[in-house]
Structures are given as C-alpha cells and as structure tokens.
Image (tube, rainbow, N blue to C red; front, side, top):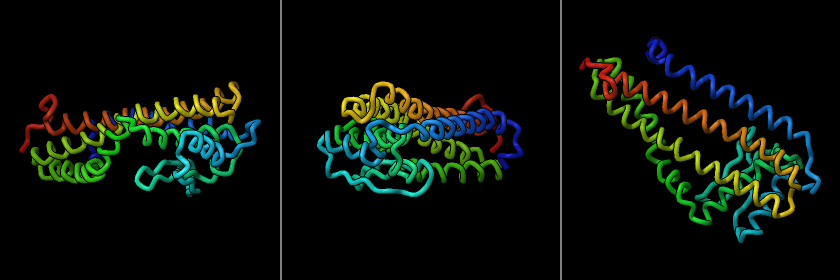
Length: 233
C-alpha cells in the first residue's frame, strides 16, 4: 500500500538513492585499498589482535564470519567477528576495518556511554520496528488514525537507534586511526589510506539516518501527528 502513495515516494526516494550511492562508494573504496598491502605484513585478524592485547583485552576472541563486510563486535559474548576478506587479508582496507571493529571492543571495555545507549535501544528497536510497520499499515488500510500514530511513535525508536549509531561508529574509527599508528601496524601514509575506507563506511550510517528520519516524517505526516496530514478515523 505504501508503494501506491506518491507522498511515500517523495520521502523514500532520497534515502534510497543516498543509501545506494553510499554502498557503492564503500565497496569501491574497499576494493581499491584491498589491492594495497601494509608494509607490516599484518592481516586484519593480527592487527585486531595486536590492538586488543595492547589494551588489556586478550580475553576478547577473534573469529571468522561469513559474508562481505559482515565484520562486527559482539559485546554479549565478547567476540570480534571478521569477514574472510578482512580476517585473512594483509591489505590496508582489511586492517582499517579490523581495527575499527577492535575499537568497538575498546569502547565496551571503557564504558563508552553512546555505545551503552545504543545497546539499550536494541531490544525495543528490534521489536518496535516490525510492529510499527504492521500497525501503520493496518491503520492505513482500515483508516484508523490511532493505529497509524502508535506505529509512527514506535518507529521513532528505530530513528533514535540510527542516530545513536553515528557517534559510536565515528569514535571507533577515531580510535582505530590513532591506535593502528601508535602500535606500529601502519605508517602515517598507510593510516591515511586506511582511513578513507572508514570514512566511506561511515557514510553508510549517515545514509541510514537520513532514510530513517525521512521515513519517520512520512509516518508523522500521514498519521496526522505532524501537519494534520490525515484526519480520517
């Protein structure tokens, strides 16, 4: 039903285009710097291990995961999972991504407030996002404004989660840039090259925020919570 609403596409298209461009950009930068090997000879896994051990986090395990750029830190089990293209590669792209994910482990150990805020939003976001779409669509289908408004409010938690992600990702990259150099994993020139990949990846999170905010505005307008866009009950 949303696809038949011209107003929906007015809000959805900018986010879709920005998200596509961001994804193409990060893949392009990763491919480019995947061809440049670090002088240290470190793989992504070894670089991450070096940073973790140097900061007293030898108990954090590093495992290989499946999927392109599926790299992430699991704070519950304290496991750093790296994709095959990062785990085994000696490229600057792989080292940059691996050290970024190690940065999340360092955030966790240091009690970095934005990380805890984002983590606390995970349960309500996972539950609320799916329910918000269901309630909004049911309200739109049966012309029941209250359901649409509840769905819009629930979707607001997803927006908060995407916004809270920005400082977490930015700080993890900042830690990676600083520590990979001080640990001797890369040279200053190599650090700058690896940072290009991290900046490109950050743009995907910016695109996610824009998409979520525009979606939220559509929900608010259609439900009548903003601008009285829907008065039907």
